[in-house]
Image (cartoon, rainbow, N blue to C red):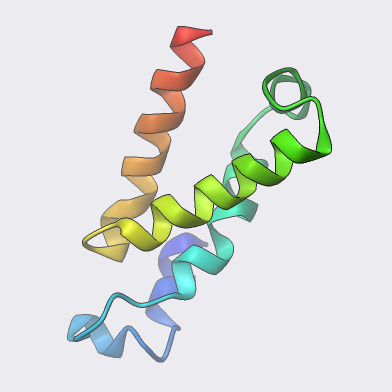
Length: 86
């Protein structure tokens, strides 16, 4: 799903983009919510303000990636590190 979203983003230009495509950043929160446990997400972000900050963090991480294709693996690695700490 993530790869298809990236490949179908007009900004991706078949991998020959000059700027970071933004399509992945728009679906990154959905991906994080789909692969995460709702109860665990609530434990980590129990208030609306914390959940909103988590959502914004996911978007910022996605926009900051050098290459959109690798951002999913990078995000999941960060998420796993965070899960291990708690």
